[in-house]
Every structure is written in structure tokens, then in C-alpha cells.
Length: 180
Image (cartoon, rainbow, N blue to C red; front, side, top):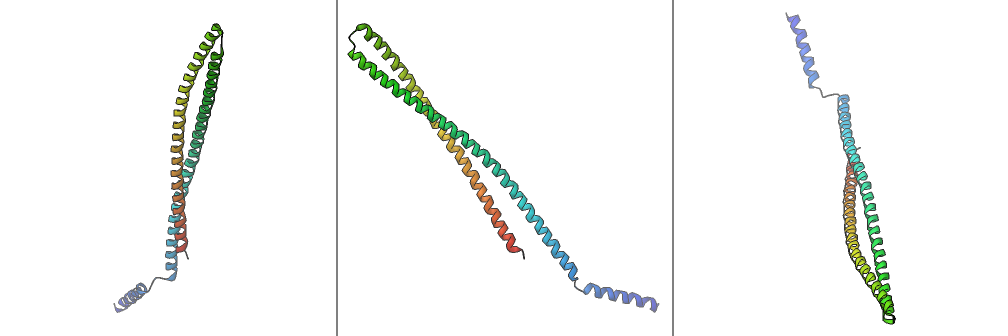
């Protein structure tokens, strides 16, 4: 019985010695590598999320630039129409003045009546053109306001993109500082 008991005691003694030893350096190295791989995987996830966010913001930025271009075109068209209307209004004003001068110099009553009719017609046209000018000025003001709104949207997107780039830069600097 003693012979059977002796191998068991020796086996238990060796096991206790083995458990008391520190983990091998291979296990520590593997654990350090596993930790590093997990950290790299997390950094990669964060980087991919930022990249996707930047791509989305850049697409929105491009679409907003297109909206600004369209709004700018509408504003330029409104300004050109208003300018054309003002030119036409000045032409009618000059024509009315010329007709009134001609009316003052006219001696024939038939000619005077024709001139008075033309003056009435020109003044009527002048009133219509004045109303058109007011409408077109309102359209121009609305187009300017719309352009400012679109530019504000673009500025907001640009700010968000700058913030995202700044966050990515700070994150990369921290990540590089933590690496050996």
C-alpha cells in the first residue's frame, strides 16, 4: 500500500510545483499579441466608420454645391430680367417725354389727338412695366434669400466635415502615440 501511496504523493507534489510556477513567456507574448490585435481591430472599426461618415458628408457637400449653383443661376436670371425691365421702363419714359414734347409743338388737332392716344398707350405700358418691375424685384429678393439659405447649409456641412477631419486627426495622433 505504501508503494501505491508513494507515486500519488510524488504526482501531487509535482502538480503543486507546476501550479506555483509563473506562466511561461510564450503565454505572455501571445496575450500581448491578442490584446494588440483587438486594439487594432477596434481602431480599424472606428476608422471605417469615420471614412463612411466622411464619404456621406462629401456626397452631401457636392449635392449642396449643385443646389447653390442652381440658386445662383436663378438669382442671376431674376437680376437680368429686372435689369431688362428697368431698361424697358426707361425707354418708355423717354418715349413718353418725347411724345409730350411733340404734342406741345403740334399744331394740327388731328395730329394732337393721335399723339394723346399714343401717350396714353405708352403711359399704360409704363404702368404695366412698373408692376412687372416690382414683381421681379420680389422674385430677386426671394432668390437672394434662397441662395443665402443654401450657402448656410453648405457652411454647416463644411463645419461638420472639418470637425470630422479634426477628430480623425486627433484619433490618429493618439493611436500613434500609444503604439511602440
